[in-house]
Amino acid sequence: MTEQREFYRKKVNVSGFLVQATGDVEFRVQDISVDGLQGYFAAMPSIGEDARVSVRLPTLDVERRAIVVRIDRDPAGGAYIGFRFLEALRTAPAFPFQTADVVDRDDDFGF
Image (tube, rainbow, N blue to C red):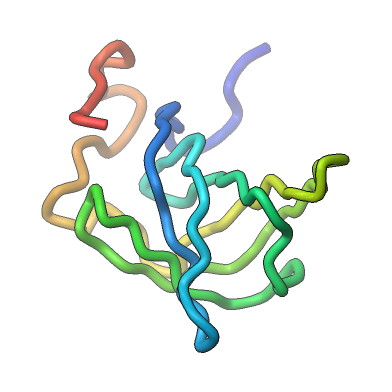
């Protein structure tokens, strides 16, 4: 199967935070690109598809507005949630890759 995404998605295992007025909700970032990310939440947060949210990524020292594009619920009560950034991460000074043709897919980028 050939990757159809515009940007390469790097597999990672780092903490991310869904920023909410009631307090930040921690999740595990599973993959990330300049355009978005997928994360795993141990418990389903109170958001739905098409919700506009803020996502904070301490490892990259950035916070971005994003839209929820996919929610896959886990039978254990958690959820895999896909986010598309409203402003691409290519503007983040610490972001270590741009596109599939300029990235060493074996590099861990410090994650």
